[in-house]
Amino acid sequence: MKIDEGIVMLEVAGTVPGMFIYPTVMWDSENMVLVDVGYGGQLDALKYAFNKEGIEFNKINKVIITHQDLDHFGGLADMIEASHHPIEVLAHEEDKPYLQGDKPLVRLNANFLNSLPEDRREMIKKMAENFKKVEVNTTLVDDQKLDYAGGITVIHTPGHTPGHICMYHHPSKTLIVGDAMNITDGKLQGPRKDILSKEDYTLALKSLEKLQKFDAKNIITYHGGLYRNIKHQTIDSLIKD
Ligand SMILES: [Zn+2]
Image (cartoon, rainbow, N blue to C red; front, side, top):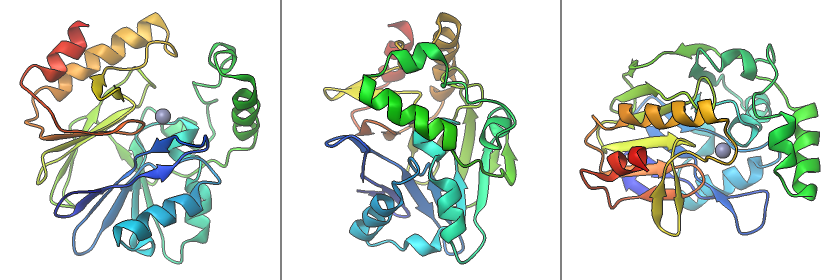
């Protein structure tokens, strides 16, 4: 879905039928930036989503990963391998060691795995054992300004993972929030409580405060898609919930 000039929200078929993920693409004359890529094995679905939007998959030269969960970066190694030109990988410094395989992924603990339905648990376990690590070329920090695609601000929003980031795309006034927010039944939600420890959930809520200063018109959540009905109190009410 076209959000504005130079920014598209993709709808990519998920690994569970009927479920979708929503990576974002932003570009200028020299750069095409993809935010999150999906699981390993979702590459064809990702390419299909590019085609559907009429944008060229082969033009991607930068990938920003919002955080270390496999549904966000699992397919990146294959994507880089298949590309005919270099792809720069950008991620926050706190999640970099996980993406590079230097630390075990935070989500792959017994608590989380046991919360999944059995068939899904096996699938995720298998993926976790075989995931392909990636090299992070550019380390991001909080409040960093990226001067491509019209200007992007990086916002460090720890909680869901230590190095989770959101982004603000200035020209279109769009917040790309990864898993910091969700949408259920058309309603904007805060971070997922059921998969986080109490401390991490509190931290994730606190992180939302950083998003309030942006005059956002659009919010793209990775699992729920686009939210446009933003009012002054929208993010405020999520924090107070
Ligand atoms: Zn996710």
